[in-house]
Image (cartoon, rainbow, N blue to C red; front, side, top):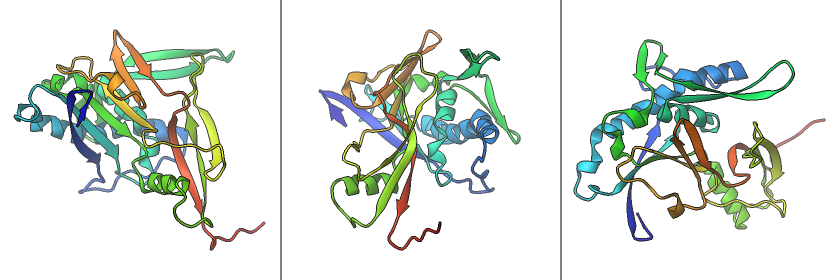
Amino acid sequence: MERLDQVICIEAVTVNPSRHKQDLPEPTNQAELDERLRDYMPIKFGSPLYSKLNKKYWEKEHVSGKSLVIAIHDYHRTGSMVWSRTALSEYLYAKRIRLTKDSNGNKSIIKEDIDFHEYEGKKIPSGFFKLPESENISAVLFTNSATITKFNRMGKIAGLGSQDIKMIRVGKLFDPDPEAFEPIPFSIDIDHPSYQEVWSESIVMFHNSNALYPVDPALFPDITHIRFHDGDYQEITRPYDVMSSVTIVITPTDKFED
């Protein structure tokens, strides 16, 4: 693609279901979620990203000397993209940030370096942007909303489809308050006059600080940008951007009992 006279090459890849064994079921509580995010999901993300790195697209004539972005989406289980974003960030930068509270309710941030991810005998080094030749990858692009439900919502906003179908969207918004430690929960009827949604919502670009050909965030002003520099995240986030959500679809055939 070309924007403002800069050519950016994009290669897409997906996180898919395992072919030789059954993937873990969806987490049902916070402990299970933390376990998935710690090692299982970084390995799931790492496999397709490492495969793309080994393709060495930057050696191709039409890519050489240009920014190269890998776009990735998690389709390994239904709905898994709603909760897996944190694992991608930790794998890319080999950094884990935890929010904690003491007995008095005081909040603090703990930052941890990650050396590797290990699960059921498989072990990979953490830090995709630290791998040899990863400097040829300018950024990794991720969204958790490249789904059929997204297209259904956008179609409904545009006035397409049946007016008898009701959509309720429930999720979490980014809180622009610098003192905030948690996202803002929300629930809204898609038909409500105040509801708005754009195609760029929930898209995140993770920048490689070591990239040979960095991507200027100004080229994509309507998405979230994250980079890691001098031991800290530097984030440019759209205020109240949707971090994750699910959409409840109600049709005329649905029956409810008191």
